Length: 135
Image (tube, rainbow, N blue to C red; front, side, top):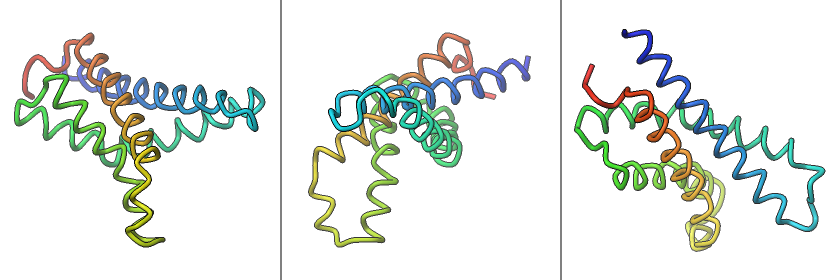
C-alpha cells in the first residue's frame, strides 16, 4: 500500500512537470519569431526546469501542506503561484536590481506556470487517492 502512495506522488510530479513543459512550449508557439520549429526545445526546457523546481521545492511544500491539512484547491494554487515566481525573483534579486521585479507580466507568467503545475499535481494526487489520509 505504501509503494502505491509513493508511485502516485512520483507520477503526479512527472505529470505536473509535463503540464508546465507543454504550457511553456504552447506559449512559445504564439511567438512569431519561434514558431513550431522550437516546440520540442521549449518543452524540454520547461519540463526539466519544472521537474527540478518541483522536486527541490514543490514536494517538500506539498508534504508540509498535507501535514497542515491545507489540501484545498485554492491553497494549492496559491502555493503553486508562489513556487512559480520563486526562481524568477531569486534570479533577479541576485543578478539585477529589485527594479527588475516590476515586470508584472513575467511574474504572472511564471506564477501561472507554478499554479498550472500545482493544479495538475493536486488533481493527479486526488485521482490516485493519495491525499485522503496522512502517512
